Image (tube, rainbow, N blue to C red; front, side):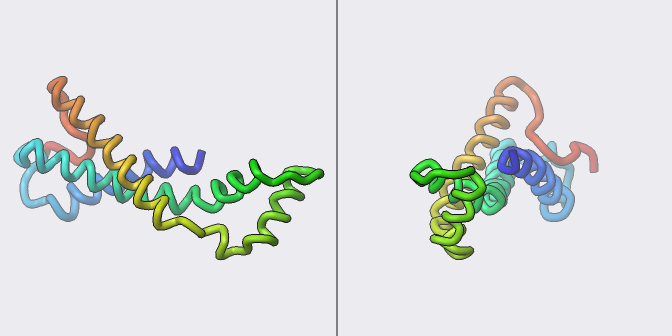
Length: 130
């Protein structure tokens, strides 16, 4: 749930930021479709980085929990895993996750907006008015 929430919320915030603060010299519709899709991909990639950071500790624990063969409650097992790996261990592999999730999320939004443009719709974010 945190991953999906971050994916949508941060994508919308980042793409709005790009159009209101960086690509604000002319109306959005005056930028080429390729430029708009580049902004979409970049916004998706950055949102993916945030998704990776938000969800990584819980995913690390869940991955370890699936391989943890002990008796007791889930919370007891989670505490045991945390004792074994520590705070630093929660973040192990984050760089690789950022590269993977950032790229996947960027392409997901790019494909979505590419399809929208093929159907004659506008790309995500921004306002067509100046």
